[in-house]
Image (cartoon, rainbow, N blue to C red; front, side, top):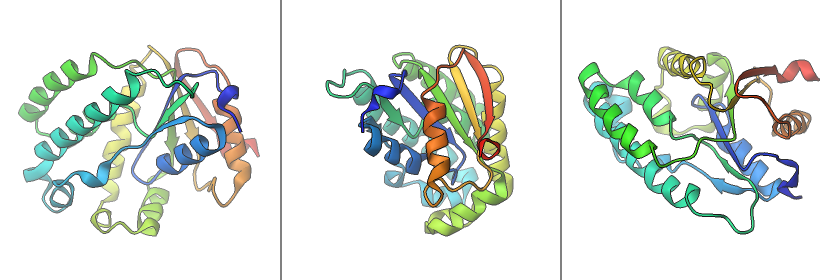
Length: 219
C-alpha cells in the first residue's frame, strides 16, 4: 500500500499508557509506507526506579526522556525523508511537558519547563495530532495483558492524572487539528474493521482545534 491517501506530512499519535499508540503506528507504517518514529522508552535507566519511588526519581526520569526524545526527533523531523510523504510518530514532544507537570513538584517543573521551551522551539507542529482515548479500566487491562514488569504497579489514579493533563492541554491548543478517537475496548488488531475506520478518519482533513469521534458508533 502507499501513504498517498494521507493529506498530512506529520501525524503524531498520542494516548495514555496502554492505549495502543505504538501498535497503531506500526500498522500504519507497514500498510501505507510511512516513515515511522517510535519512542525508545525502555532505554530509560531511571524508569523502573521511578515506578517504585516516584518522588525521588521523577526529575531524572523526565529529564532523560526529554533528552532522548529531543535527540530522536532532531534527527527525524528536521531532515527530509526522500521516499516517504508522511511521517507517523507514536508520541509528540509536548508529551514531555505534560508528564513532567503530572510528576514533578512546583520548583522542579518550573526549571524543567524552561529547558523544554528551549528544546521545543526547533520542532514543527504536527499536521494532525491523534489521541487514542480509552477509559482507565481498559488501559489497566491492556497494561496487564502486555506484561511489562515495571508497569504492573501503575495505579488507576496515576492514569487518570495523565489523562487529565492531556485534556487540559487539548482545550488550550488551537495551532493544529487534534482528533480524539473514543475507542473504549475496540481492538483494532483483533477486529480489523476498527483499523479500517481509523485509517479512513486519518485520511480526512480537519480544521485547527479539537475534534472528537466515537469509533465504535461508526460501526
